[in-house]
Amino acid sequence: MGRPLANRYPYTDVYFHARQTQPYIHTSIVTILDRQLKHHFIILYRNHVRLPRNNSLARLVKEDCQVRGELIVMKLSSVNAKTIVNMRAGDTRLSDFAVAQ
Image (cartoon, rainbow, N blue to C red; front, side):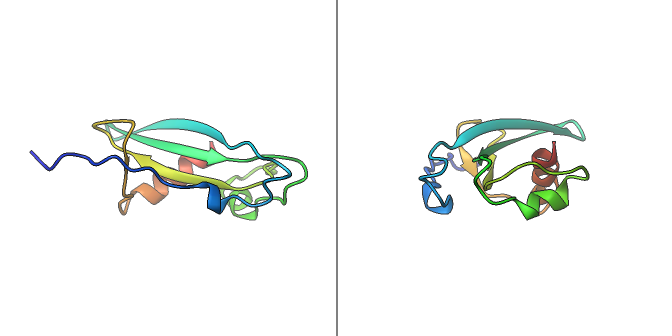
């Protein structure tokens, strides 16, 4: 077996701006099934009418994007869904798909 997974505690608050407009960070856990493999992602985001439009997300979504604010996507371990792991080559495509949904 491989080495044990270490607990990681990312400090994401520094990446979210305009905290006085929207101080709350929402969390969603998404599971994607790709070729019989489950991939888990955690998406942290803020959405508020006074925040700027998210142009990166608008490019991923084919429809009119109404999301205003920022988001962060991190990959969760398939062994322990409470552990954050490094994203690998194919995970970018899967995380883009998860966010677009």
